[in-house]
Image (cartoon, rainbow, N blue to C red; front, side, top):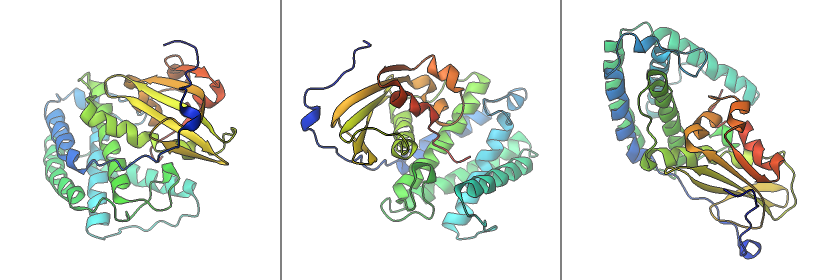
Length: 292
């Protein structure tokens, strides 16, 4: 790709269009089937392989996937809140969730791999049915806080859950040397969901109104996302709008790791191409599209 900044001739006349919903409920069955197949294929030594999550080995990640699925069904489907957090800030919420995650991993990693898989298989079927039953445009019980939302639609919460299930399975695959799940059908919705955090991640970045930053993920599962400055607010547009001032291209192999704290910024920077305003273009490396 040339270092020259690409500014489409029509940009100054284009009107930003809001990005549409990401519908992923129909994909949960395929994702969960792949997970069960993966776990069944692991040998004893695979379960103790270190993942890119510093505190978690493969079995810890599997335990986390079981724990969070059980908690989601209990709370969102059954309306049962075992613990009600007393939170006054996002930091309090993150601390509470991290504590729950630690407790869940501690409990479920005690199980044998065979029993863990059996429980996962049962819970996954119920989880698939739950997500498929939701009205995607009804209000979700919880907002997607990493995107800065105070109220989210079910489609966004479901897509967020899909990215969680996908990236943790990807961590296991990476740790045990199995092929990743980077087909366009599965991986593009994950990337699209991650990118919905751009306006919130860029909220403190200043640029003149009418400017646009373009973000590309290269590879067959990638795409382009456009961040448009409208007065004092950044908005995500599904098409170019305004005057393009930067363009950032990230290889699809590391995109998910950037947004889930699975790679250092220095390592990622060496593989990311930026033209135009580097300050603006590289700020994406600070974006985290998960809680914690």
